[in-house]
Amino acid sequence: MMLQSLEKSGISFEAGFKHFDAKRPTLLMIHGAGGRAHVWRNQIFPLKSSLNTLAIDLPGHGNTTGNAGNTIHEYAKWLTKTLDAFFPQQPYVMGHSMGGAIVQETAFLNPSLMKGIILVGTGPRLGVAPAFLEGLLANFENMVETIIGYAYAPDVDRRLINDGAALMKESGSAVVHGDFMACNQFDMRDRIARIALPTLILCGEKDKLTSPSLSEKLKNAIPESQFDIIPSAGHMVMIENPKALNKRVLDFILETER
Image (cartoon, rainbow, N blue to C red; front, side, top):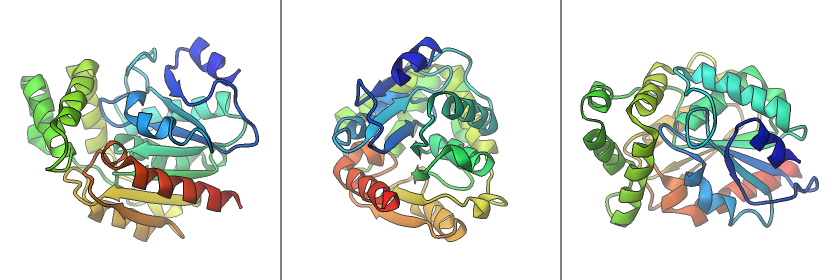
């Protein structure tokens, strides 16, 4: 029923279940700038034996209807409505990069809609280099190649970089630039300490886009949060080292459920 309702409302997704199991915790996943639900495939399917796993496309991304947001606050309002309308049982919500910013904002504004949050490769502020913002308008395809080159650890399989660049290019210049602008304007530093949900913070040890120091700032600010650095991974940690990330995510959820 949940999946049919999402579909009818114009929200596209990838799910690890056909029939929702009310006895299991639910993990909802939110992608980053210029991304889509597809980036969570290494979590959706391996974790489906223990959790109801579901990743959604943000508005204007993938096949979700509506326009992409211009601010993190806009996306957070949309996520709030989605959680309220389709998730009567509170899920754990995991966000990557821009998705992590959206989850932070939503957790601050509407904590009652979630059981806990998982922040992956993100920070309380997400400044973007002016050259990235300018390049996404002036020379979109080349700038995407540059950004994706920074997004993976140096020794990663080149096919992952090619796939990542192709996926971001599909979103188009206007959406990707808007997402990076939204990231650049995002700043939760004065509010982050007021998040009171169970929180897990994860970051790839070789992340060059959102360095582990940003995750440490989240850890230091959010009361009783947990923090781990995932080895052998850059910014796209859920793709680069899914086994380590999945184990930490599942352990956190099962611990919180006890």
